[in-house]
Length: 79
Image 1 (cartoon, rainbow, N blue to C red):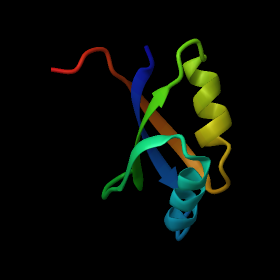
Image 2: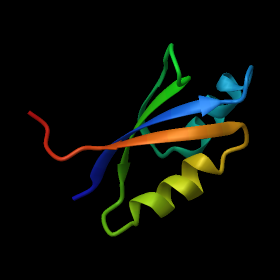
Image 3: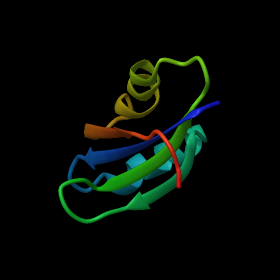
Image 4: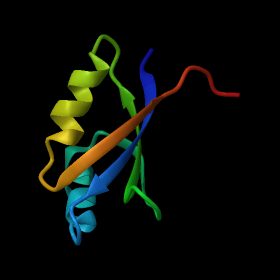
């Protein structure tokens, strides 16, 4: 069973579309939205079973050029 997480992403100014394109090319996301407020993107993804969540996010999201900060919300159960 995979773990569903939501990741808010703050991008460098003017780089939101580049970051979104880089995420899309990696084909790791379930859904990806642009947002207003403190963060620029909201990413929903499923961490593969057996993967370390922090390592997966660091390697596949935080390492993308022009990602300045991420905030991860772990989920437990859908209703």
